[in-house]
Structure formats: C-alpha cells, structure tokens
Image (spheres, rainbow, N blue to C red):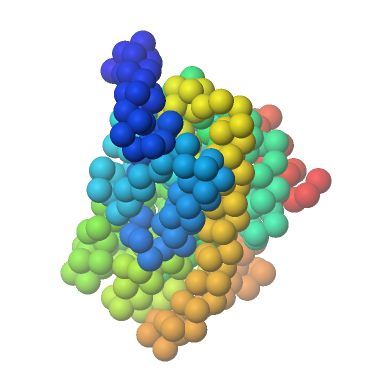
Length: 331
C-alpha cells in the first residue's frame, strides 16, 4: 500500500474517531492492540495505561485495549497502526526493523547487559533518535517497554560458552539479527511461530529456544526443556507507537496526558517484570537446571558476537552503533 493511501486511510479513521465520539462521550476513541496474554507484565501495563489516560483526560480519550493477538500478529498490528485501523501498539523492535533497518541495533547481542545499561540506551538520545525515524513509516514512536532479558534453554547440554551451542536446533524469532547471532555461535537456528514452540520442543522438531523468563514461564517451556542458561544476551524490547495522524489529531494538552501515561506504563511494566522474574526463578528451579554464565563464559559469547556487529553495522550505521555502545557503558 502506498504512503499516500496510508495517509488517506489514517485521516479517514481519525475523522471517524472524532465525529463518532459523541455517542461515547469521548472526543477521541483509540484502539490499542498487542499480542500478549493478559497475565503478562506488559499486558497489565496496557490496562493501567488505559485507566491513566481516561482518568487524566477527564474522559475525553477512550482506549479500547485488544490483547492476545485478537487483531493479528505483531507485523499485522504494525501495518494496521500505519493505516490508522489500530491507533496504539507495542511491537517488538525486531519486527519494526522490517520498516526501519536501524532498529536492528537494539537486537545486537550483549549491547545492553543489565537494567542500567538498558535504560541508558533506550531512554537516552540513541533510543529517542530511533523512535524519530519511524515517522516516515507513518508511526509516532513514544518510548520503549520490554519483557526483560532473553535467556537460552535447550535439551542437549548445559550452555556455558558459544561452543556448547554447536549444531543445536534453536527456535528463534524471525529476525535477521537473531538468526545471524545463533549462526555465529555455531547453532542451527530455525524460525518458528511462537504458538508452535511448545509442541516443537516436545516433539524434538527444535531442541532449544530463547525468550525472556516471562515468556518461558507463561508458555511452560520449562516443562519440555532440561537446561536454562541465564545469558541475558538481548533485552526483549517493545516500542510503544501510535498512528501518526491519530497522534497529530490530539491537542497539546492531551498529547501530554498520553505521553505521561506512556511513561508511567513503561515504568510499571519494568517493575512488574523484575518482580515476576524473581518469582518465576523460584517456581521453576526444581523443574529445569539453571546455569549462570561465568565471567569467562560471558566474554566468550561477547567475542563470538563480533561478526554479528560487523554484519549489521552497515545497516545501522557505524556512528549509531558506536554511540549506543558508549551509552550502554555509561561513557
């Protein structure tokens, strides 16, 4: 679909929202779609976002949250947001890279290694610059939510260094950076739909996978895996975005209400994620062997990740990669 057609559809949707508002006693009615099940931290944060916006706008904005892939997968939701059929979304940045290649930056392994480095990159100048690049795709980038750091699980052997991944069939996201990362580690990466992973692991179609703890637990992957290594190699980042025409239709005071609520929900999601991870580790420790990387093991992974940086540096730009690395280190 052409950019001009997107804009026409989006503006028509915004006009329908505004003129249809009288029946709902709201000036603006926005649909917020995501793929997450309602028990996850970010899905709970989406509900809190809705409540905050509706309260602080005195009912002038109404948010209709559509969770659990009711309106399709992440790519479909991004496209619907571009067209104005959906107004708010929180897709993974790995999927947004299909529309803005510099988003590949946020999936580079071991760029962000802890909560503080994550905040310096995502909440600082580098993260803000990446969000601004989405405007040419008819999206208004607001901020970054997230589901925590990704960990590796498998049924073959404990993973303590990249060599241990040799030839293991790992299910990964359909994202070029992730596929390249596991190839660099010597694994056999295979893209597979998230909903098919449990059966794939159970039947041996794939032997391992990577996900944040919340996803591992909610999908019960620990029931069909022997080993989990806490690699924390990539932060599972979501970008909170709006249809650009919908954002532009808001007066300045309501834009502030929305931005404040987005920031509150981001922080709430992160707090819930941290609390959930402690509980999850306590609950699954008797069902799956949990391995902590040694400093030497972590260094081996970082060294093995260098070809991935070399491959994607051209798409992201060397300058942006360098700035992100410095920001992550607090330099």
